[in-house]
Amino acid sequence: MSEGLVTSNKVHRAIFVEVFAGNRDPAHIAKKARIIRPVADRAIADLERTGILAREGEEIKLTPAGERLAHDLKRKELLS
View: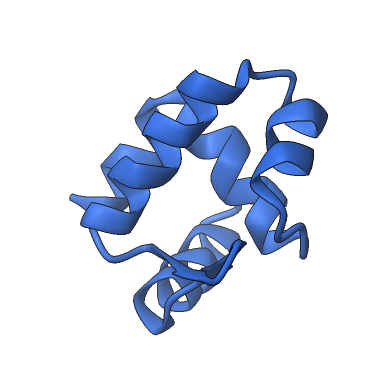
């Protein structure tokens, strides 16, 4: 399910790619992905609920499940 959530939704995918690239600040992630902040916040919350992302204070990071998903997507060449 997590893979489908990331690959089938362009907002979730953009946020996942930015966090995977090392961006941790939600405002910067939204700006870089060209997504308005409320939409980005909802997508981040969705990814948190599924256990892909986690917050550390004001920063966002991949969870171990998110790291595994990134590895799987990269192996399948669905993530650059």
